[in-house]
Length: 170
Image (tube, rainbow, N blue to C red):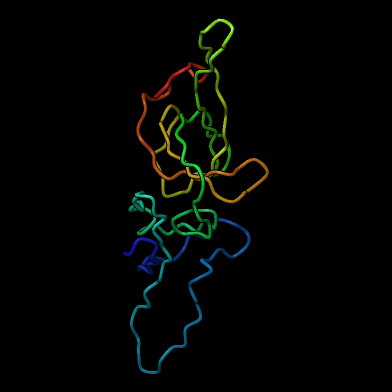
């Protein structure tokens, strides 16, 4: 696929888990049927490349999930900052909290102190095996909710479930 191209791939029927009917906006579902043709209709799936050197996950291309906030299959563009952090909480639906540790210089004493910031990020269903302690790369996007302004682009396995509040520069 081209750098920012769109890809319509073949996938199975979309998962319907919400009360409202879930569909991908760019896919037209009411194609006219031709008389005499009795073949299996192939389901189309909208997938795109977010750019910036991030690969589209296999699950995004072959999966059946519908997520309008997914950077690979939804209507969200990645622009601005690219950050990394450690997953500290996965209690929300499709949203994770990541912890970013950094050092801050105190000029008076010419020493550093440890500080951290928590950041909420949207986690697309295409990233299946994400756990606490994993290192994730997130990209800035438009505001998706009151606190979410980032989208997960890549997951690197961490040390597993370690102490949440332990300071660690990955």
